[in-house]
Image (cartoon, rainbow, N blue to C red; front, side, top):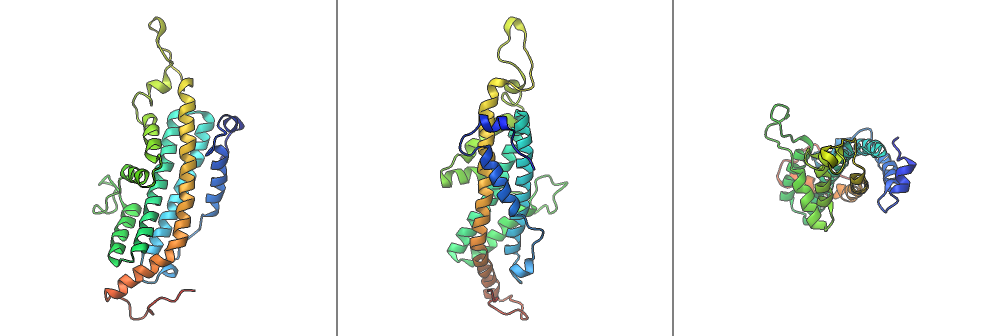
Length: 258
């Protein structure tokens, strides 16, 4: 279990700081489940199972990235910290975007929206970009940067600001190269190299810690949304199948639920 060094906790005691991340990590570990029974969720619709699968794989990815980010933050490695922190944000926003789509579909009660949601789930779970490794060339991965921009605008939160600042270090440009691995200036024509410019450290670590804390809270919120809406989604998806005339004769409609 990754924990922040005491020096990091003392240096960054702000809200959404190291202690918040450690608390969230414990909560996220409690959300892990060993398997998903798709038939129990719905005997005719794959949507509820896909939601649970997306949540569980996204949860595990975020836990792994968060623990790795903690280790790199403790070492004050700026570039790897930026890459890992940005990864938590990308994963969390993908899940949150899908959960918000579920809320909208359930609120609409429109079975036509179920089809679009299934397409979104399919792209989120199975999509790819590189044709040589795609499991299905017809399923293209969703654009995570677009998702982050949309969520930032919709909820008036600085998610894209986090993403942009971390990307400056994640990419091999000025901040990810010169501002990290050289000292300021070149007195007497001498450029000094380093393994992490001290003047760059604090701003990047504050951004990274805030990003990871936000990502963890988004993951937990996504599970809450699913818990509140999954049964309604299953019922709507099943009504869609029934009204389309493709309901299996051997299964009772509506599906009894306790």
